Amino acid sequence: MSCKIPAEVQNYINLVETGPYRCCKEQHSLVAYIQKVFESEDLYVDEEQLRHYLCLAKYFPFKKLFPWQEFLIALWDCTYKADGTPRWKTLFSMLGRGAGKDGTIAFDAFAAVSPYNPVGHYDVDICANNEEQAMRPVLDIIETLETPGSETKLNKFYYHTKEVVQGRRNKGCIKGRTNNPKGRDGMRSGKTIFNEVHAYQNYDNIKVFITGQGKVAQPRVGIFTSNGEVNDGPLDDYLARGRRILFEGEPDNGFLPFICCLESKDQVHDPENWYMANPSLAYMPHLLQEIEDEYRDWCDHPEQNADFLTKRMGIRAGFKEVSVTDYEKVLATKKPLPDLAGWACTVGLDYAELSDWAAVNIHFRRGEKRYDLNHAWICAQSKTLSRVKAPWQQWARDGIVTVVQDVSINPDLLAQYIAEAATRYSIRMLALDHFRWTMVAEAMRRIGFDAADKSRVKLVRPSDIMQVDPIIQNCFDRGLFHWGNNPCLRWAVNNTKRVRSSRSAGVDTGNFVYAKIEAKSRKTDPFMALVASMVVEPCLGNGQAVELPPLGAFVF
Image 1 (cartoon, one colour):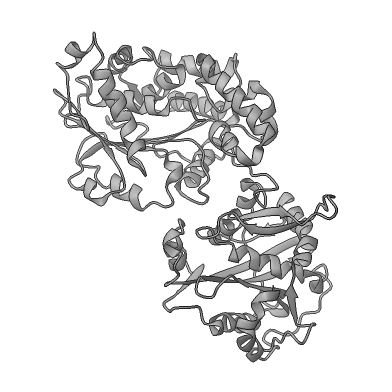
Image 2: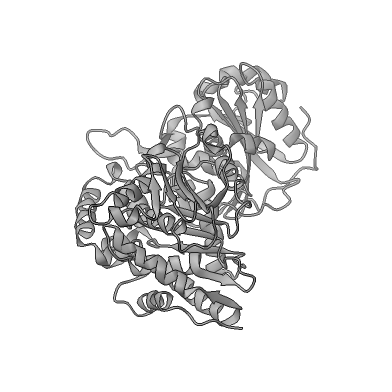
């Protein structure tokens, strides 16, 4: 069976395929995918419902939706499977800042509680991390309802207070919801919309909001966002799922990925590429001027205007003075680990305070490829733990970190971990920061590591890090790191910045050391443990000619 593609969808498909403005590869793949779905599936488009919905735009300041907005409304709201359920229950939409996400949310919610939605009591909950983001679309609707000239007519179909909008005939309510648990009681969502999901650290609140669905027919979920700086959070999962659907043939299972972004930092220097991140730019000359101004500021002071790339252009790309490497290169470390039993390795250890975090990294090499096993310990009584915006509880459940229920992390825990590793791998050398030895010295000596033996222990100084930094950069650039699935280690990399070493006589040395991007909430210990282990990597040779002792030959 097949269904004719509605004019609003076909119009956007034509714009993507033939111009006049550039579109990213995700958009090209999406329109090809949509055409394939309409050709091969038994679908029904309620064109009367779509026409009524789109006519509601005249009451808003923008008067008419942009082509990409009509495209999404048609697919998400008005395209159904043969059994009458929405073909795409979940819409994921990531666009550059200024494209009109709030306006889209406001219009869509307005239509959902209008008389043209046959599903009664179709509540729309707009959810966000803060009240301003949750309420902005609601306030836009209220402003529309209070517009002179339209107010009298719309009052026949909508009722509103300062916080809630209700369709008089549909009985559905539009509300803004934050993470306050008290605001979730009694939710019966027909549509749940998440605004700026890039700010979500985990799925805790998302799951709670979505569990309010299922009591009303035709439930839908909307995920609207720009790109952001929270790594390994829900946004990354949504992006990865969307790209698997678009490029790897994964079934969409009702997930519609609408992704607009640049593909690389280099593209930002051509203004014609800016349309790839923002499909509204062609219709908003004032926004184009604003982006031009921001681009000039970014070129002059990139370290102070990092949001330009992330928010406007949809790509996370730190600068060498700010981040260790590009986010995509960090994500590329998620490669499977081979059976490392019996391999020669080095061990890196790092902590700032044992009353906070500590980490051990076991580092292997084979030719140019590097393999790392990384584990962290978290002091449950750390004074800064509440400031850590990362899913460390889930990491603990996954065995990636250990939470220590004590006032500090006992060095014997680290020593025991290293000693157990020595029964499986051939540990050639231990490395840690020069100023961190004292606190762990006794525990390390008990398992056979003494700083007095320089062939077994290396106390790392900043000059050592300067020497190993180019090697680390090369490993990231060429995709040589294999870390398995360790989000804690990736998180730590993204918490770290490269800073130039002190300059001599005003001459830039070109050397780098590492530092925390933010001292209290962004921990770097797992990555710095890896750095320490790579400082002593030369003792492994190239990983091919090392003669390995029998498994468990080292006795401590």
